[in-house]
Structures are given as structure tokens and as C-alpha cells.
Image (cartoon, rainbow, N blue to C red):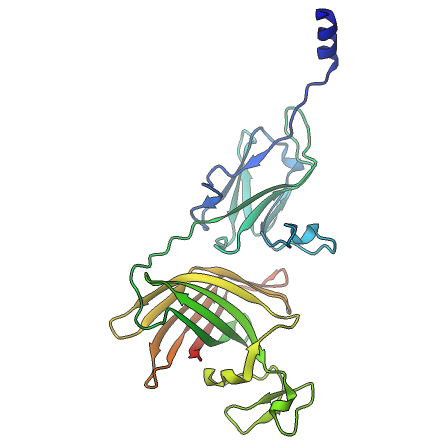
Length: 331
């Protein structure tokens, strides 16, 4: 019997698992500094020529599938990729023992949305040469520490706004936004921004506008204009609606409202990535900085600046983004 068991044991091939990645510096899936290198550790030395790795925004469908995993595959929303060389978004190095892969992003990674580290099939270690056969995914994000410590008397606890952002870099354009902003008792805000477009109802003008135009009622008199016509002031908000077409986009942001001694409130958000679907534009680490105050009619209005660390037109890097903004509360 012992001989039989020994023969069976010797006949069986010893199983060796493929190398597995981890983010050793992540605590409960959170890293602390989006500007710091991302350290990827493997449980055994890897063969560098077999490593294909990406960091992407963790944007999935209702089945948890990334864009390139869906029935109609699309491109990942990449922030960094490596396929033998650093092909996009930063630089990297592999430690002498072949177990620690350190990624230095070109720009700080975003606080939002969550990110995912992807290690593609085919990765082998140097000892057994057993490849991974399924994509490895590690979802992570960054811990957002907001120094909000006082309520705001200037900005209401819940309010809606219309914003005009006049972009100056990398190309001149006007972006219209509606926003819902909730301010907590400590001054921390949660905001959701929606792309706005001119009201497409042609019957708002008399006679009705052709379907290719939109009716502009403000500042008056009413006239048919191209839908892309810029707004002169935020008081024209009644002529706009939330965009629900194929080019629609929205984004969320957190930040602080801090009342100032001159009866104004400073509004600053933690950097966030903004994606515009059509045309394909990405603003990396977008920050809105503005000062809000009530005017003589009691309407809360704001003005300030927009900045972005990098602007991608499709996948082409176009430099930093910059612009000015004005905003007003809406009923």
C-alpha cells in the first residue's frame, strides 16, 4: 500500500501557481498620495519581457465589465500602460530581485473615479515559468483628506447653479454646466455637474425655429441661433437644459467651502478627472477655484478659475488646461 501511494505521489506533477501582484502600500484599497509612485509587488521574481500592465479608470457596466471586456469592446480609459516599455502616462522600474515594479505617473493620479491595476495574461516568473491565464485586477483609489472645519453662511446647504466656463487653453471654447451642490455642516461639499445645452424646443420662438437652430430668448428679443452659440452671462440659464444627447457628460466632485471675513466664500474642489464623450476630451486633475457671494438681490454668484494638469484630445496629450468661470444660483 505504501509503495502504491508513493508511486501515485511521484507520478503527480507538483502544481506551481503563477506570480500574483499586489499593492502593498494600499490600506483597505486606499493609497495616500496621488502624486507618489505606485508600487506593485509580486510574490516571486517575474520575467520582465512577459509583463503587460495598465492603470485605468475603473469604469464598468452593470456586470462589472471594463470597456474592453464588454460585448462591443471599446478602449480602456487609460492613465498608464507598460508593454515591455513605458508606452503611456509615466515611467517605471523593476527592482533587482524582480519582485517590485515601481510606476512614476507623468501626472498625479485622480481621486475620482476609482482606479484599477491590470496585469494581463502571459506574465511568468523566473523560477517555474508558469503564466497567468486570466487578467488580474486590483481596484484602488486615493484617500481624500479634506480640511473642512466650519459651516458656510454664504452658500446654502442645498442649491443649484448654472456655470459658464470659458476655456483658454489648450483651445478656446465655452463649456456650460448645471450643478447641484450640497454643503455639509462642516463646510464640505458634494457636487454633481452636468453638461448643459441650449433648449432644443423650436416652439419657444415665434415663428418656430428650424430644427437645426435653438431659440434664444435672453437677453432678448427672441431669436433663432445655432445651438453652439455662447452665452454672455449666467442670467441666460433659462435658455439651457441638461444635455441628454449622445454628447452628454457629467462628473462629481468633493471639496470645501470656507467663509471669508469679507462676506464671501472660497470654493475649492479636490482634483477630479472630467470626460467629455463627444468630442472625446479628458481633463486630468481638474480643479475649480471660485469665490461666491450674494449680490444685492440675494442671488449667490461666483467667479474664479479652472485648471487641469493635462488635456487629452482623444489619446493625444495637449498640455495643461486653463480657463475662467462664472456661476449663479438658479431657482
